[in-house]
Amino acid sequence: MAAMLEVNDINVYYGAIHAIKGISLTVAEGEIVTLIGANGAGKSTTLRTISGLLTPKEGTISFLGEPIAGVPAQEIVRRGISQVPEGRRIFANMTVMENLELGAYTRTDKDGVEQDYEMVFNRFPRLLERKQQAAGTLSGGEQQMLAMGRALMSRPKLLLLDEPSMGLAPLLIREIFNIIVDINQAGTTVLLVEQNANMALSIANRAYVLETGRITLSGDAKELAASEKIRKAYLGG
Amino acid sequence: MDFGSLLVQQLINGVSLGSIYALIALGYTMVYGIIKLINFAHGDIYMVGAYVGFFAITVLGWGIFPALIVSMAVTGLLGMVVERLAYKPLRHAPRISVLITAIGVSFFLEYATMYFVTPTPRTFPDVFSSTGITVGGFVVNGQQLLIFAITLILMVILTYIVQKTKIGKAMRAVSFDTETAQLMGIDADRVISITFGIGSALAAAGGVLVGVYYNSIDPLMGIMPGLKAFVAAVLGGIGVIPGAMAGGLILGVVESLVSGFLSSTFRDAAAFAILILVLLFRPAGIFGTNTQEKV
Ligand SMILES: Nc1ncnc2c1ncn2[C@@H]1O[C@H](COP(=O)(O)OP(=O)(O)OP(=O)(O)O)[C@@H](O)[C@H]1O
Ligand SMILES: [Mg+2]
Image (cartoon, rainbow over the protein chains, first blue to last red):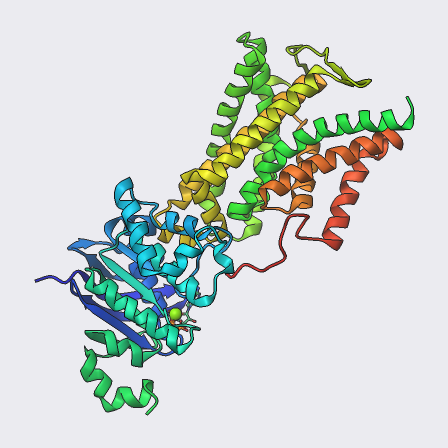
């Protein structure tokens, strides 16, 4: 059976910089897969390529059996992939509600969209209280919730998350990760990029380890979490 | 006239002139807001708008309102074509290349217009009664009323589009963070094109109104108002829509006061003095924030 997402030996460049050097990975429907690695390993570049913001110079990407490398970003969302970008990138000068409306930009089913606002506000009650507030005035954690809610508004089949724990207090990180598990159990497949390997491995089914543009290890998340190599490099001992 | 009534009369004149500046400044600011381009051809778009209105009235024999609407439509389309042909291929080019291209487009529009309609100024027909109303001894003539009314209506419509409609929200999103807007499913190229269309249509309205107000149009008429509107946009805070409206009005009033109380020869100097002062003391403009956007 073909995986939902198949990334096959892609090479991605920023001008002369060879950022991704032949990465292959797969995500099957229903999974949480995590991509971990140090600063500059190429995690964000991988997600940005899947989302269509970058085009691989070589290699293929397919989603639900269709090739998507080179398809423009705005089209990728319509195919069912949505991304929570690194650093949240909320529209700070717009209200919380407007951010969610933009998340639903591709949708034409009004009733479904209304239901999904409900769903987002149920998941993130703090956003409901701050519906008309400028998004830039939210706290870091609330902004992360908004970025996630916004991404869910397109009803993605596959959700890409780029370092959702960045800059958050431990308690809040736990809350965010619980929500990721909830979202997954509600039927959304998740590809999670993290530097916080501990947390990521604890919720993922499978994991890939990225080092300077190459995948150096991959496998079952629990096994990787137990492996000596990973413990030394990413889990602080 | 005594000082007080001269002042009020100059304010009325200033607001009419300022409304025109505001209409042009909006296009500058919207385009800058979305692709960070100072579109130096914008003043010439305004000129084309005046000519389209002129021919709709003289050749087709239309009234001012249909002429205004058709001028906005045709010129809006022209703005989109210019964007598609001249600026879109340079989307990832250095900013200076785009700027130079804009200057080229400006010359092209000026001299192509001259080629087709000759450089001779045309007299804009008297399509709107100049008999105005007198309020407490002050005369607001018919053309000024027309300018206030049209400008007000267009600004209300624009504000509604930008604040409330789906395309308006997409415009704000693209201008704030193009990449993230694309991640929402927004086709940034289409939004940029529509922004050029709206900005050009507003400038066209300004062009037709100026024709009605000053009675004379020529192929180089866009140069000075283009520069002035640019000053107005910077004064209000380039990229900020209410800023362009306010900047235009302030600039118009200042110019009128200077020509009323000092001498009309200082009028243009006043506008550029404002530009220098703003750049020195408040480069972000009146409505601009100095906060750095995260890139
Ligand atoms: N816009 C860019 N232009 C040039 N090089 C870039 C650009 N963005 C990223 N890079 C380079 O590509 C490599 C991978 O960067 P990427 O952002 O994908 O890393 P990352 O794994 O997400 O790191 P982090 O954990 O810090 O977010 C780095 O060497 C980086 O310097
Ligand atoms: Mg990153």
